[in-house]
Amino acid sequence: MDDKIKKRENFPKGVKGLKFLTNFCIAITGIILAGSLPILIRGWVEGEWRWRLYVESIRETLEGLWPIGEIAFLNYRAGQEMPLFPNIFAYIVYSLEILFLALLVAIITSLTFTIVTMLLSDNIRERVKMRLYFLESVPDLLIIMLAQLSVIFFFKETGVLISKIAVAGDDRIYWLPVLCLAVLPTIQLYRLSMLTFQEEERQMYVELAHALGFSKVYIVLIHMFRNAIISVFFQSKRTMWFMLSNLFVLELMFNLPGIMLFLRGNMHPLGFLVTIFSFFLPMFILYSFGEWFFVSRRQNKAVA
Amino acid sequence: MWRQPYFIFGFFILSFFLAGSFVYEWVWGDVPAQTHYLMEDGRAVEAAPISPNWQHPLGTDQYGYDLLGKLMLGAKYTILAALAVAAVRMAIAVPIGYLFGTYFDKQRKWMSSFADSMHYIPLTLFAAYVLTPLLWMPENGFSSTLSERISVQVIIMALLTVPIVSVLVANEAALLRDKEYILAAKTLGAGRFRIIRKHLYPQMREKIAVLYGQQVMETFIILAHLGLLDLFLGGTKVSYDPMFGDPPMSISYEWAGLFGSSFRYLQSAPWLPLAPVICIGLAIFSVSLMMEGYLRSKNPKIKKVRRQPQEDPVVEWNREQLREKMVRLKNENQPK
Image (tube, rainbow over all chains, first blue to last red; front, side):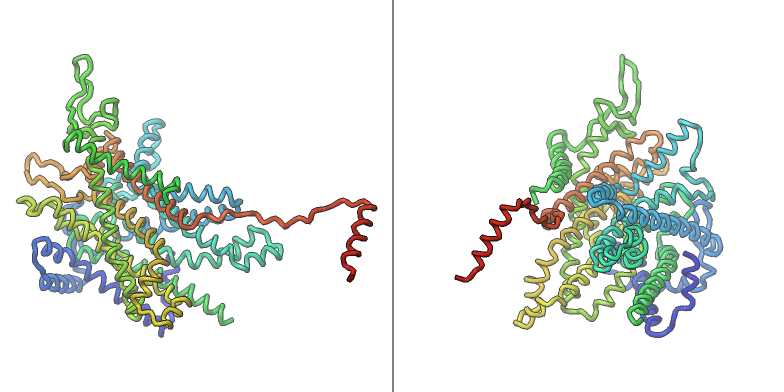
């Protein structure tokens, strides 16, 4: 993931760059406008419109942003104010690590599952698909709680602690939260990629390849994979969005020292803005890069 | 639709909870049974929270209230709220989507990149952030009534993702608009409104139904998440007593509140947080069953008939029959 982000430096300037910039600006404006929304709502509940206060709050937030090194937040774990760099930044990094690790796990497992199911016969494929579809309705909270309970149960039975289920202080735990976070996105991505792969299967070139005598494994892995992966990527944004909510709950339930938990103690526009930006920047760059990468590749192919 | 087993099963679960909820309130009143101690041979054997037994199938909470009763009482709030949030959202987003898909096509790009920015804000966080001033009880109590708060909450939660949903609808409408039959309708002089009403809407009815189902499922999840944050449907009762402050409590017995106020008991009394979450899961499951059933009734699965190459009937001829046949063929073909 990381080197993908770095490669973005050689993003070609010009029309594409301009579009990238406009999207970026619109997105930032949207987030800033959303940041002061509670003021409007509070006024609305009490029966008046507080547009002026709203604008005022946006201005204050933007002013508070400027000397970025001086932003400080209350950390209720330590019970004192903490500067954004480097203390809060460490939280951000930890949250992002968990998020992207889970994403990676979800992508790899779901694609593997998809390829395996594609190789099965039609009947079995339908059955596997239905089971997994209904698994999707399991709430994330249930998964987290079951994971925690089973760790406790395992500990009571054998005396082996597989993983810590809650964090005290500034400890870091990785694999259990990553696993919990990855389960639902895996199912969603699986559903998505199954749809795309099956659509792809009906295309003419697959039939041609069959006729030419290529094996099923080869066609699925080489030909269909390349085409299907593009549309899976474009549709995966919703999954990502969903994962962010899950991450939030995960940090609460495991008491992880992450950025979401920290926001809970800082429910004001500036805190909201910093938290959202910490996710927005890497994700936006990742998606813009992916879009550019896939679109340009497709165009190159069309020209050649 | 009513012949699909999936749909009926899902509908049955959901209506069981809803009807059960109203019946329970009607028969036993709106306070669940309370048991402080479990007595056996004149001795107290277990104090609240009591683990599941025959008298209390799902156990009791830390104050001795029967959990099953609480769940049944709360079912109507949770389910109706989720259905309402999704309905309000669709009612606002679908017309906006059509407007952007037909009348304001040029602005659609702006709209979609604005909605795109919403994809970076975790919905739970956003909802919690926006709803806190509404739901958290101020020190001198709420100034609004329960039903007022619930309706305001429903509207706000519905509005949160209106941009995303309407962009989805707009893109879909724009795709359909470029089809040939719509061009033909335009040439014949159909206005935009007529095109929306007569062509775009009927074409997209199924997609809109599925979208509605997805919104309901999403709302259940968000409600559960908000419960974890002590923001309960219809407001959180907060005790400002510095000495004997009760933990934040839900005013109605809705499921998210039941879960949110008890997830700290996961280890000592696992049935407390697990039961409401399983109920939420069941509700989501039933919605997804209904969606699947609906889809199947609309486009019944074309049974894949293995088209076997038609075998030519192999007929064994013996020599005499062959000669006979050939003679007959020859006679038939001969012009008379």
